[in-house]
Image 1 (cartoon, helix red, strand yellow):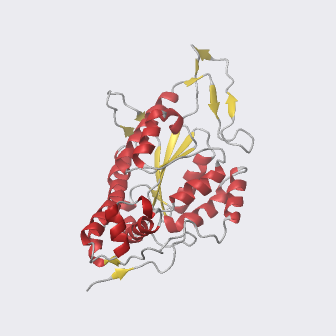
Image 2: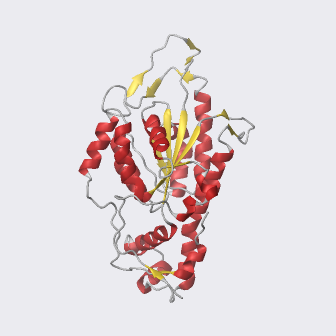
Length: 330
């Protein structure tokens, strides 16, 4: 029997539902803190980090999982002057390597990269935090919200206990990893629709032809290969981020120079795209002003608005049941 799956309406992120099947597998349940499974722990961890000047949220922006709303709307309202450029892959990684200290020290940063590259980012930031946890340079630093409504204002850190321009710092830099996910079939279908219906002129001749045909049977190899590519994102999220985080949650391995990062507090939060709005609505009550005020106003301004509506004018693709074999249950 052949089954075709289509989106019945543009996707929204305004209602909560159960996690995709792979997140409910036993081995996935014990890794990280999932919003749906541990709501209070998730909100406590995230809110605590937002309000801690030495806590940094590193977000793995997986394509078509609500990442635009996460970074451009919700966190942009919480940290209004915290500029983030997450797109895409090689460009993002190059920008990070050019000034990793600046990137790691942002209160929130986002990266549209594969899991193995995100792991490099996390490892680099952990090393930077480890070094800063021993000494902090007696210089300008960026405070999250030092008593006013603008994030990123430069403040002088006052201290008379300095040694060679460095001062002892009793506070500890730490990190929270945030990753969003989506049902693999819906994620793949949404990615196909974006490829075929948005910035069509930028696509390769092969992709343009397949999109015009908009048929699994007519371009089977093309659609199968694309499904494999879409699924690599989830494989990479699980293997290169989730499993790695669990294995290194207490001690982070030495880097290539043999320097160990040591004991760290590394939390991983996972959030389904359908739970984004319910999560941040509840988060308001876990935050203090000005963070709660900003987030509440953002949610009110965006109430009933569809984020990133799906375009279907060129191709409304039917996801063939044969393509499902390429989707991993993780």
